[in-house]
Length: 262
Image (cartoon, rainbow, N blue to C red; front, side, top):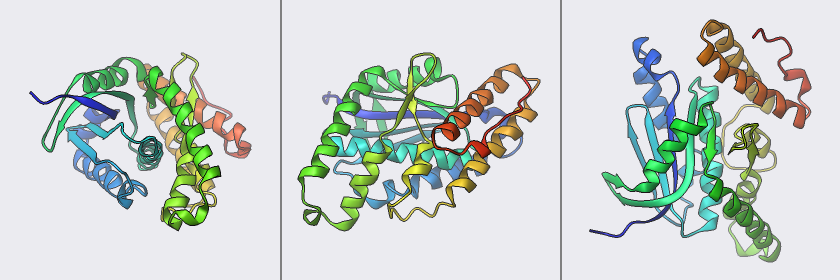
């Protein structure tokens, strides 16, 4: 049997998939997710040093890239940040797990403990619409960010192509995560809005305030829709609190939620 090797692994699924299927929206949903992944501003540039693998089954999605390059990990996290933001403003809410773990990866086959561990984070820890890091990965990410900043300072700008240099700056700025009240770290996907400033990544995003408005409108709609369903309501209350924290941190206080009925 071939040896397993370490990969950075994202596993996520769609919250509320069952009701979407029952409402006849499943075909749109899957097409939209596949389109967002395929046309992602970073994934579509073919800038990874390693091969990126993508798999999907029903509402379950897995992305994996080998662990040979810290540059690739930075771009991978930045890509995930943009994917989650794109999905949310498209009305598709996901939760997931991001880890480093062993896999055997082939074109139409994937196997290994890494897949199980990523699934367990999504299924048992994530709970809310967030992509949660394995705690062991956080230390590595902090080290990688320092390495990237050092690389930016020491390498002459003219040694890299303009696209590669701008992508490097964008990746550094996208290495964001937050520590939640339960002690788990998650991808700070709204920070992807802030990261667009000054970086030409050919990402046809609307103004930041428009993205925030769409984000808040969807949350408000779902809170009203599920006010009698405690389990789902709690998930969107988490989104509401996350939205407000972002607005406070980046001075968008006029776009906060103020009156939400529990």
